[in-house]
Figure 1 (tube, rainbow, N blue to C red):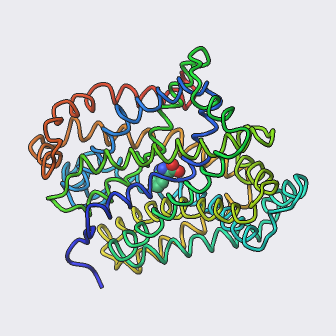
Figure 2 (figure 1 turned 90 degrees about the vertical axis):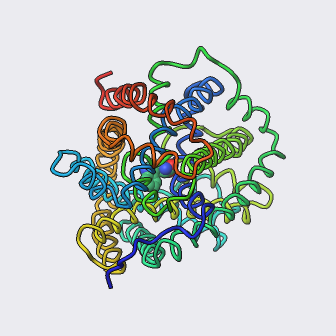
Figure 3 (figure 1 turned 135 degrees about the vertical axis):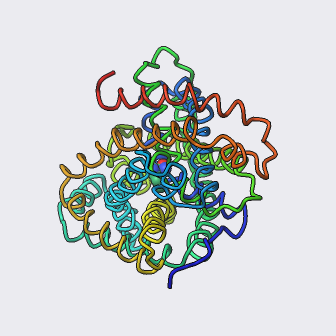
Length: 437
Ligand code: TRP
């Protein structure tokens, strides 16, 4: 049945948990720790915080405002505000990016599920480094195994999204996000007792400004963008389920704060583990699926801790995947008039099929990730920022920002940042990412 009334979040905290669930993902637990280490720790962290506050947060507010003002998903939002304009292309780009990103996000999320299984069946604790290395090797070298877990993960995602905005996405975010916080604190508590804790903290927060490069600054900007789930219509879609009276500005501030906190806490837990066991803080999926298990296997209580760690990872990936699928579902419902059930199932099957090549071929995985991260996300983000700053009706924009907000007095400042520094910054990230700068 086609819904006649648009669905809404049941509460403000529900919205914040869902938006934070989208933002907190592999980017926080895996990517942030290692790029921080590579870029000189403390100085990079400061730059990153500035990027979140002055670029990420303004774009997030722009996306959520656009969604709430139109009560529509990305393409129809653009169409309704700028009929016949080329802007709808940005809306379509957002939807295409969601499809592509989810297709291979599910590959890594599938690995996380497989590791949950290994942890629960006691196949991590007590294993030697060679065995754990081989376990990851055989997972990536056995297509049927990878695909089975990828499909299982997509099925879980579909199940949550089918249930709807407040009964599915919001309800599960309310359960998964607090659990994730507790697990993170348990792991942090354990890291605190390790001998490498001080060294890990120093690596992370020691201020080595000389290690910071212009490339590092652009990387911080690019990551601020990715970690807040910007540039692909997620926040437009989630904003479209916000009620008029909700304070979207403080909700955006809260969401960015939670995301940043999780990235910091995850790093404070990972680096001490790595240093204590004398492991490499190097790049790649290996950090999560080889290095971390090697360390967990040697720890007292490692069996239980590995369960906590991989369930945490799977939860973080699930709440992110839900939000990507929701973008496509909302598009099919809004523009094609399909029911939620049909939209979700069709989108889920299509995206799962598209993800199979990424699961079986690392070449494809690398390619699609390259285009999504370097081309599609920055272009989408730039498009949305320019649209809201320069094209959206001023009264509508102001209303969307100010309605229900106790931070209404920041409207002018926000608009200025969105008009000038943000497009320049995102433009620079784009040029850097595609290799021009
Ligand atoms: N923010 C997610 C992370 O840090 C990744 C991500 C990027 C994402 N864009 C997204 C998640 C859109 C959900 C929706 O891992």
